[in-house]
Length: 208
Image (cartoon, rainbow, N blue to C red):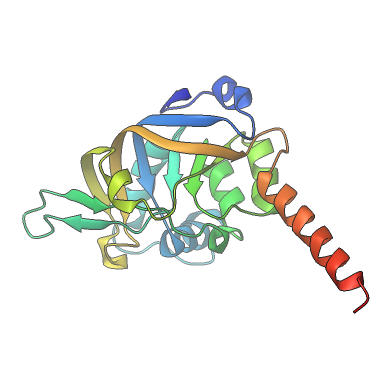
């Protein structure tokens, strides 16, 4: 397995190929639907005026995300009352919901990796080539195990989105994943989609 540490350089990203098993260590951020929509509308397409602490959070995110990773995760977190946060469950959520946003977010913030499950589409794949970046597929159904790789919760932004949708700044040690979309145009998800369509076409073409 390849060891990946954040922040990740362009050179390290270019060395990764579809099928590479990796362990990831360092600081990353969680972000789901509300976060991506907020980033796009407020700071990338600017169709919404900043409100409250938006600008302050944005300036922090520019530093934190530069060369780092967004994890599509809606964690279960203990210690909410005392702010002694600990991840109890941290499994990946389905990534395709972020397809309209992800490439633009990657390029704007220089995000080098996206972690989730289920893969993403052509727009994100192009974003991986241009940024450059990769998509890491995490283990679905292993939320408690993955939470054990979270060694520290450094803080949280946009808690008004709710605990699962907030931006959690976490440090991980040996987070396991597999590269399924790389910066060279390779996508295991596209390969599976194509082969599945071929099987379906063959089945439909058979006389009964």
